Image: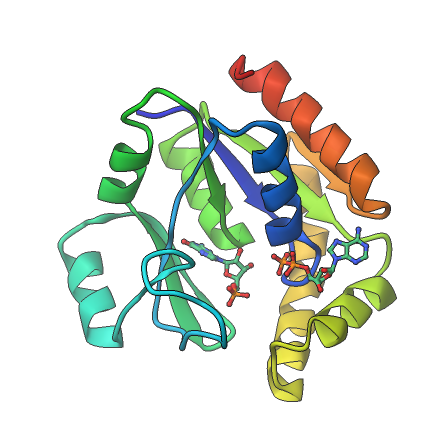
Length: 186
Ligand code: ADP
Ligand code: 5GP
């Protein structure tokens, strides 16, 4: 199984932003592209941001056992394909999985050696402000994400590493340190 780094935490906390900065600092890191039934947002590209697929196609992958983990989130399905992890890890570099908490729990069971990092917001108000400020989700989507966030925040103690994303540069530094220390990657 590949060396994997799971980055989890509520929607809008800054996972995507942090991972972009992490990969600038550690260019060898690979990013697992997830499958989802969610519609692409403006600017998102098929097979770069996600493997966008129909609910039928997603279900076929579930039935065939192709997912390492998968979960329902805010009205859509999301999952990590085993083949995706295998392709990304072929060069030997660690693979980053950006997934929500239910998926992170499944990975903890199936890939216990994977590094698990929970990204926490400085406050729930800051999380709401980031979701609104990002401007990508309709108000009802933002509310669904904030409702889920309450349960996700309550689960943070399950994770080996917790990084509070208050000042972005500090959070990136912490994340780089964790990945270096746990994966021996440059
Ligand atoms: P996620 O991938 O967890 O859903 P994003 O990376 O899309 O979150 O970040 C959500 C919004 O918050 C974006 O508009 C991003 O620019 C902003 N953001 C990320 N980190 C910080 C931070 N440390 N301080 C303020 N805003 C941030
Ligand atoms: P978004 O719709 O904002 O891109 O993602 C919503 C949530 O789904 C985020 O918390 C994101 O981390 C999570 N997610 C993305 N890909 C996967 C995946 O493959 N598996 C799981 N379990 N969650 C995912």
